Image (tube, rainbow over all chains, first blue to last red; front, side):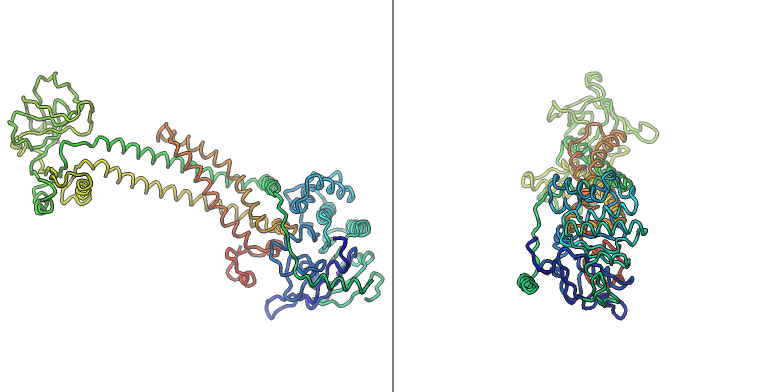
Amino acid sequence: MSKWIGPVISCHEISKFYPVGDGLFALRDVDIEVEEGWFVAIMGPSGSGKSTLLNILGGIDRPSHGEVILKGRKFSRLSEDDLAVMRRTEIGMVFQFFNLLPELTAVENIGFPMRLAGYKDKEISERVQYLMESVGLSDRQNHYPSELSGGEQQRVAICRALATKPSVVLADEPTGNLDSARSKEIMELFARFNKEERQTFIVATHDPSFLDYADLVIKIRDGEVIERSDKHGTLI
Amino acid sequence: MERSSKAAHAEQSAAGAMEIKVTGTNLFPLYSLVAKRRIRYTPVFAVLVLCAVTVSVAASFLVTTVIARNVEMFSARVEEAFLPFDGMLLFASQEGLDTFMNKERYFRDKANLTVTNYVEVESTIGPLKLLGNGTDLETDAIELLFPWTPSQPLDAQGSEVKAWVIGKDGPESQFTWTDVKLVSQDESETHMLYGWASVNPSLIENSKGSKPCVILTTTQLYSTNPLRDRLFRDLEKNSYGATRVITPLSGKVSLERATQGAFSFWHVASLIVLLGTAVAITCVLTVSFLGRKRPLGIIRVLGGTISDLARMMLVEAAYMGAPGIVLGVFAGRYLTVFLEQGSVLPASAYVVSIVTGVLTLIAGVYLPVKLIKNANCDQLLNNKPVYVVSNPSCANCGLCGGV
């Protein structure tokens, strides 16, 4: 996997059309190329198509037109099950509302994608231990999501997204449901994993503080990319 | 560098669509873990499914026991239907007999018909059925055609047998026979149901309670089994105006009728119970499914396939229902003994009830699994309607409902 040269994930002329009313383009001709180890922030107001774009990049939704290419291979036309199997090892997702499985403990939640991907028990416990320590939740291992605070739940969710060392981690408004102190913690976590593990992140947000960490900022409005810049505001 | 990376990219892009290799790992421990946690998380669903399975298993246990007992009881009676004549038809009135005799031609080559009288009496040796076919007997002679268990030993009465026709106000007419002949076919067996005797026809012709009857003796041609059986079955079925038909097949035919009745009644009852419990399980599991579309969607996002979700649901239903099968068998046993439907329980009851429990579960799990299989990631994660029929255009329209 590390031998791959070129964009780890890219999409070309992606459009998403909803046949409601007169028809609605949630996305129109979006082109994105993300190199390995980049931290990408997708900015834009609510309803601008950020979530749709992330869902399409993660293989949860399908584009009406265009292709998503992960490490040189197209996947947008795969079957639902093949997409699911692909997500096991290639894509990690973090959501605004944490979306942990309520009936499983923190450890089991983090181990879940690893079990699906067929890791051995020993590998799973090592990786889970490492991740929980690095996010500072070693003492919360056997707590259920309902016993954790919002910030803690989001940290567990980040661990879960990172568990299988995916090619890309997609985060949809990861701080949207947290206060500013917790948001800062979460952002720093992203930045740390981005630096230490060269983990590729694509974060959709309307929180401008993410700009400080981003290698690439993509601004979207009404489903169209209106600006690409690096963190210093230099247009690309 | 830039150029070479782009070239490499283009080269690898040309490889086209991604190929997915599914690793052959055993995911059962994961399904099992999720199912157990799920049950602990929302125990009310598990309790409901458990109750439904218990009821269906217990009901089918009871039903099987009753049916098995009915069959056993009637089989016992069939063995006793063993008669001193080939067949007999009993008529309520002379008109009935006349109607029958109009069809005499039908029986010409099949059986010889003897028209005579019949009366039921209480005698000093127990209840007797008198046939007036002893034309060669004296009026004081009686021929006991059958060994039965006399209520009084014959010797105690001397060689005299007295009998009375019992009416509304007690004994009405009295018969006395001093010449008792015993025509026994098989002395070792006792036959409780029929105590038959032949007497002189003139004796009972005008007696109260006397009814016309026809005794059939099959001809040589019809003495072989398949033809005889056909004739008797025909008589049992059509009866030709007779109020009662007695043939060696009577017991068997009544068994068949009774068991048919029993089977149909109990089958309908048990089918209703089974349908009810299957519907109950379907409802419970569907509601449970609808209440957790989002967690199921997350499992899809994390890489669970549709069949993973379906198997999780099946494992969960099995965990919920399996104790119900065991409980149901115990409940069925208790119920059967409590309702006095027999203390010796047939093995078939155990087998049938366990199979029933499993089938009920499968029937109950069918719809929720179908719903799961037709749901895509987006529908689950964003709590959108899911459709029983998998039709992609349905999901876009959504006019016809969906759950």
